[in-house]
Amino acid sequence: MTKHRLELFSDGVFAIVLTLLVLDLRVPSAPGLAGLWEIVPALFVHAASFLVVASLWFAHHGVLARVTTINSRTLKLNLVCLFWITLIPFGAKNAAEHPLEAIGASLAAAATGFGILSLLYMRLSAHSTIDDNPRLERYRRRQVAAVFALGAVDVAGAAMAWITPWPAYAATTATAIILLAMPSPAEVEQRAGAPTDGATSSGE
Image 1 (cartoon, rainbow, N blue to C red):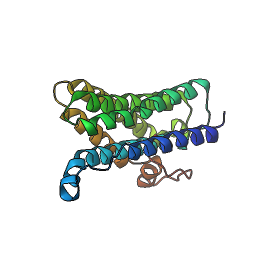
Image 2: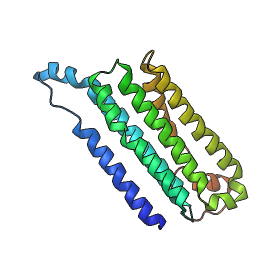
Image 3: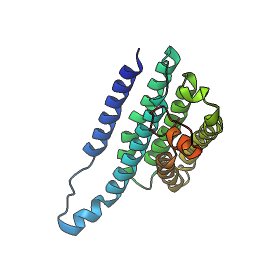
């Protein structure tokens, strides 16, 4: 399978997941400000979930930006990653309807954490031009460590949600923000004064 076909399939899954998020929003039963107040938790959960899925899509794009070879292990790990991402709308729906209960927050955090870890191992299963660039060796090691730590924090937040949901909410939101803030390989090369190979996306 070519990398282009893998990207098209994955982008389609991400698009469906984002669509499912908005379909879970319900019209409030009360009119005016009372109705707005009624759906405030759902709106916050929707915004946070959208941010998480968008950051994972951004990271997924960055992972494949400089990958040169797709193997069977990469395909399987990509499917595992997408499986976890498709669970985010279900977790978000439960969190929107019962924001202070454990199930929704825990499932959303677990799906985010295991999705990130699957994405990390997918990247490590494939050869990338980053692997051949000694100027990016330190960047590569730091990115791998950072992404692994984010996944571990999300999984820990999912476990802690059964005591209180707030660690799970904090972990998933922080993960999305950090993923979006991570520098791309091209940015790192430009800071070092080295020529880039044309890739401008974030992530590994």
